[in-house]
Amino acid sequence: MKIFSSEQLYQADQITTEKQQITPSDLMERAGTQIFNWLHQRMQGAQVPIHIFCGIGNNGGDGLVIGRLLIENGYNVHMYVVNCSDKRSKNFLINYDRIKNVTKSWPHLMTSEEDFPEINPEDIIIDAIFGIGMNRKLDGWVKKLIQYLNAEKAFKLAVDMPTGLYANEPLQDPEAVLQANHTLTFQAPKLSFFLPETGKYVPFFEVLEIGLDPEFLHTTEPLAELIAKQEAQKFYKQRQKFDHKGTYGHALVIAGSYGKIGAAILASKSAFKAGAGLVTSFVPKCGYSILQTALPEAMVLTDTEDTFITDIQLNFEPSAIAVGMGIATEKKTVSALVKLFSETKAPMVIDADAINCISENKELLKVLPKYSILTPHLGELERLLGPTKNDFDRIEKTKAFSKKNDVIVIIKGANTITVFGDKLYVNTTGNPGMATAGSGDVLSGVIAGLLSQGYDPLIAAVFGVYLHGSAGNIVSQQVSYEAVMASDISNALGNAYLALFEQEPQPQEEPQEK
Ligand SMILES: NC(=O)C1=CN([C@@H]2O[C@H](COP(=O)(O)OP(=O)(O)OC[C@H]3O[C@@H](n4cnc5c(N)ncnc54)[C@H](O)[C@@H]3O)[C@@H](O)[C@H]2O)[C@@H](O)CC1
Ligand SMILES: Nc1ncnc2c1ncn2[C@@H]1O[C@H](COP(=O)(O)OP(=O)(O)O)[C@@H](O)[C@H]1O
Ligand SMILES: [K+]
Image 1: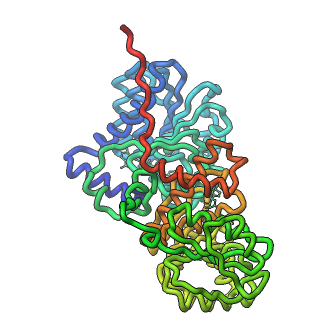
Image 2: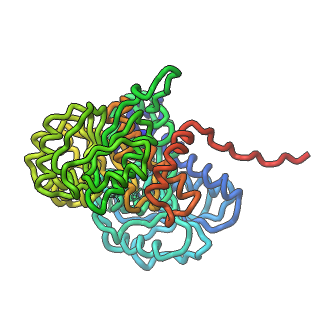
């Protein structure tokens, strides 16, 4: 699914009205009707008080349409206009006028704190104050209204976006954002829903299609691409009957130091689980017996040094490499990386301490192989790029880094984002159970396993992140978030592949009366 910017959505709006020969207020009617249908299906006429707060722009206009339809269908509706400015939009005014046709009680005009209504915990609040058109900080009584509503226990439903958030710009005032329980967003999710500083205000959302021009939606390069099952399925390469282990490549995992050999085990095992034909682990000498015991399927090569990596000597040509998990940042390790980066032709995943080595020794950037995949968590990323001001600044700096160095960067987190030049891929799988030691090592192994099977680096990155998160979801459903361990995620990779083509359970039909 595509994530469009607010500018693109305005453009889509305009093209749609032109091509479909409808008025903007017809489009608003569609949008409001979608939300009404959503509510009506769930409420079935229940007389719960619904408080609709409408701004003075088109988001407010949507609120007025929703209110009108609810009133027409006999719901218990209380409408308010958050009258913070005289500049009411044309389509707000059209729908303001239409309210007259369905009720004698005109929406309550709010102009100060004194107008804040009483709301009970069982009531419903609909936030149609601002949507994608918010263009400045909320202040004065409007900010107080948001805080007042946040303090209420009533269920809060946001129209298009929670008021106070921007679609694709950083948050200005965390104390002036509506804490919506649910958001119904039009046509495409917004980038801010997926970033840590802003996404926390959008715990649940659904996309409601409003019939924007399909050609525009199809042909426009989006701000980002959301990767869910439907997208992930397209990446999968079917195995052929006469394939043999050579077909799936020989992955090399360079990892571990004294006390951190587990990183090499987790990554090597995950490369196998992702489908690599052969896996060799390169570790300091101290890791030899540990690896041979823990993972008999892997071949093991060792450094001359006992406790850390100093010189990577190979006796084969790997088809993919994952390097850096638990290798520390000793000077000799940095030299070994310079040599590896300069000489190796295989596609590479660069993780953890290998990223830290780059941050501390910028000369490594000069030899970074093209299309390498870097997999930093936020701490590693800040070390690499320097401090960033906010989530959006971080994305822009990562794009610049990716372009300058011709690499793919995976920003790991709740919604991991893969960055390649200006392209962004936002992952939808994963859960807080995966915030556990070693889960990053598993991801590096998975991506190396995909690379070794011949997946293109960008696809290996995006697909690997999806499968890894999916495995994490499968495990957490079995054992709880708390009990997820990295080795469980690795073990669940097989189920993640199977889940890729599993049919979703169909909703049970209501029993029919005879
Ligand atoms: N294609 C789409 O996405 C569609 C969008 N529609 C709705 O239209 C919304 C966008 O409408 P608008 O562009 O009118 O924008 P909004 O309704 O979000 O409000 C913006 C208006 O309020 C003013 N304003 C902005 N920030 C303010 C602040 N902090 N304090 C006081 N005034 C402020 C602006 O000058 C502008 O007039 C969407 O979010 C959606 O709800 C639908 O009606 C139809 C289709
Ligand atoms: N809250 C979360 N939701 C979803 N995924 C998460 C969450 N926290 C962590 N993860 C995932 O777990 C992995 C953690 O990686 P990392 O921090 O490198 O772990 P380690 O260094 O212990 O191996 C990443 O893939 C990240 O996206
Ligand atoms: K809103």
